[in-house]
Length: 132
Picture 1 (spheres, rainbow, N blue to C red):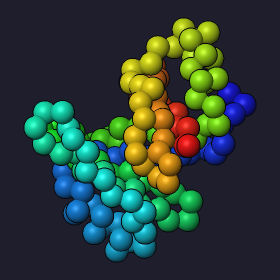
Picture 2: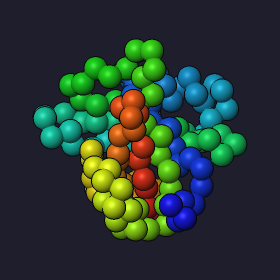
Picture 3: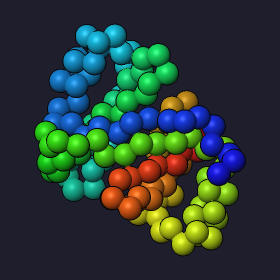
Picture 4: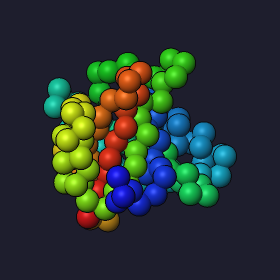
């Protein structure tokens, strides 16, 4: 995977309440870069916020109707920025590594991002992001 742009794109953390997490991490010196509310597809809104400090980018997400937080090891995924998502997808296909999500476009950052996810051997999720 020669087109990896940086070691970590972001660390995805499921939270019970985005605002509580935003307030907590702001106290630690994190800047809030973006906030989003997206249709959940089940009658509610998913709440997402991105926070950054010294090159560390965190994604907090509160999914409508899902309890995914407050468990040990609740970090859901690590994201890796790539230059060309299609090349990564071709490599994964060659390696017989199936996608568990995506490719999906989201209106994040200045011009949006397309992502896809795979699972590692212990069900850890690795997300690949191509920013537009």
